[in-house]
Image (cartoon, rainbow, N blue to C red; front, side):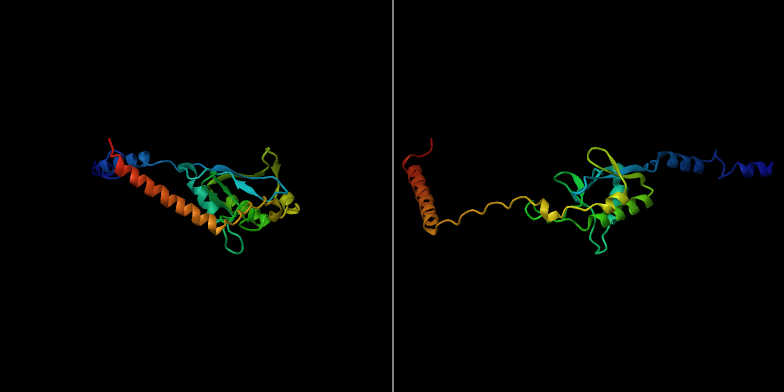
Length: 191
């Protein structure tokens, strides 16, 4: 009988301590499930999008993996652009007339495939075109990529420098308009 009461002690399911542990285990959120990831790219254009919405509770782990994808020069392969909102390989200082990428596109794709394949947060990884065609890394390594400089838009037209005399006249006119407004307010008080 003494042995039976010892078994019904603190370690049994009937004990209060065990119930607290079970309640905690039931209340803790389940581990996030693994999600598929794709890189959208249309060869020979070297601009790629990493298909992740950021930030989201469901994909924080995938975003962390994207941040670990680094070129050999230690630059990140992917940049999150909050204006679009997308992850892509366009350098943060890129401009339409002076485009820049974060690094070599083939290196970016190979590193990305490796990092996401190793991650338990990623259930499947693929390279796809914008029309949905699946691509293989071997095929992408053979592409003769368009140099990013060739994708540059025309530089914005530079404004002609203004004549300093015109600028001086504009300043003088603004000053005179302010003086007239002050005089009008003195002559006709507000109603």
